[in-house]
Amino acid sequence: EIEGERGGEVDQEGVFEAVRVAAEEVEDSGVTALAVRGLLSEETLTSAAAAGPGAGLGSLELKRLVMALHRMDLELLVQLDCLKIQEVLRASHLNEGLACQCLREACRFLVSEYHLDGIIFLHAEKLAHGDGGMVLDRPPLVEDLCSDPALAATKLVAVPFGDHLLPRGGVRGFPHWGRWAECNGRFVSDMRDLYSGEEETGCADLAKVSMRLAGSADLFQGWENGSFHLHAERPPYHGLNAASAVGGLPLSQELLEEGWALEERESIRWALITSVFVSQGVPMVRLVDLSSESWAEDLALISKLSSFRECYFDLIQKSSFNDLKDTRWHGVDAAEEPAWGPPAPVVSSGLPFEPAPVAEPGVAGADGRGRFIGMSLWSSSGMDAVYAGFNGNDADVNVTLPPPQIGHKWFVLLDSGRMELSLTNEHARAGVEYLVKAKSSILLVMQRPKNSE
Image (cartoon, rainbow, N blue to C red; front, side):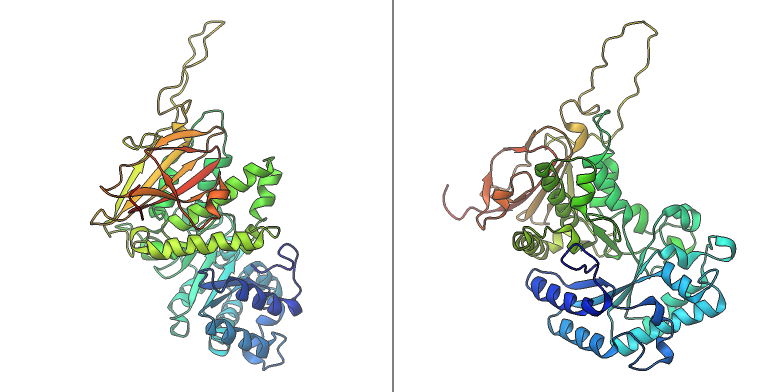
């Protein structure tokens, strides 16, 4: 989303210039695509296929923009709001015959005329509704779009706002026929819960956190004996992972409204952005999640994370859930797994005064284990590895690291609790143990030291 002054709404006349400026600023940061809202007006989009250069879409300007971005090796994906499209068409739902035809022709026109690389559908649940708001199990418009040969090379991305508005309660996400990509709302919510969830139990659902870091198999992996439109396998890279919800408030503002102090907000913000780059899927960074006050520093860190992901792409990303990767999960002690289970229920004895329940080691989280998870990824030779640790506790946690290969050491690439380390080009060495600050994350790489130390 491109927003004026990196915080306020941009009118349509200024959005082209805003995109150009943003593209120039992120060109060398490792960003490969821009997803932009506001380039097209839903009010004029629906008549675009029958109109010429004067359709109100800034057609010549848009063509120049696409050409300029492609020269920078940047793809352009436009965001369309299905709610607004339905209002403009004055249709009771988008699967009506005329509405369906109009939207399909508009998408074809955008791709053929402007050579857009993809279309992102906000409020995508509207594409799956029929008469009276009924949720359609196999919405014809969605199937038509994903099987249209004119859109075969176009990225189609769904951004549904609410699983309950999708077929079968959204258990398998947006109806996709193995074709549609999807903004992974579960990634946003489960990673946020690790840092912002209830602290009373001392535990987070670390099984869900590991699921998100490993590509959200519950959403994208194929299911046997299921309907193809929902249960066909989608590769992990069909999931777009972000630190905050697309279309929502900037991450810093959300954290401010939750009552976090500035230092905690920054630590959590970069912990969540780090999680996007170490997880399977496509990292999606909303520009509004970067700070306008430290824009250059934030872009430098994004570039650092992008370079890291490119360097270790074979360790991080699977082309299929059937690909074998050496992924290891760690608790506070690297030799132990995380505390997967929920806290044990407290059974009352009926006495008027009872001692406070004692937390079980590794379960109730009194020692930090209930809200810490580590993940290490190893090459088949064992000579390359990365380690990511996420501490959702209110206190610092002293963790042990997995033993590196002989002759290698762990080096700190990014520590969201110590940003001064992350902003330098020199990587600090990590020892056998590492103190992970409260509400933070660490990202380490295993390398051979440059000197004999």
